[in-house]
Image (cartoon, rainbow, N blue to C red; front, side, top):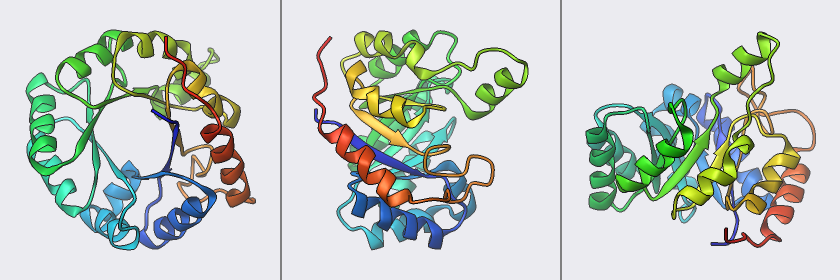
Length: 232
């Protein structure tokens, strides 16, 4: 598949999310993500507002589902989400329920391997259970905690190629990537490039970053869209 740029709206109010989303789409972003902070703050209202404003744009609801999978996926799909996220650390039945709801309500499922004991095995397990995409994810708190202890902060790029080679479904890398690293993801075989904290969102305040964000996003989108995703 051709590279896709997704912006994570890790914001806490609908108005700022709508404003940021409109700017991102002008810059060439392909998918919108109702980030976990937005879902916690605004719930289904945030997803409905994004769908009403952006009728034909894919919307990822980053639920990080751990239980109650069918109902959560159903509610988000009916609110307008085209993609929902379930965690690899959830029970297998939860993942299966999200996959079933995805089929029933026309919503794709993204499986997140964050804090899997083995990230590669976690990705393969998600694929085997029917997920449509894998999110290869090093968590926010994990990264900050390791860095605070004076150790090297882990990166999703450390095992990205191995994850890509282990599955047949598209992979997205998430977690502390620099702008340059995010742009390089398609070269690893990961076509879904997500931009969020700290690239476009202030990672500590969860508000839109300062500076000429639209120009930066346009540059990123152009660089990502110009690439071909290699087969490994």
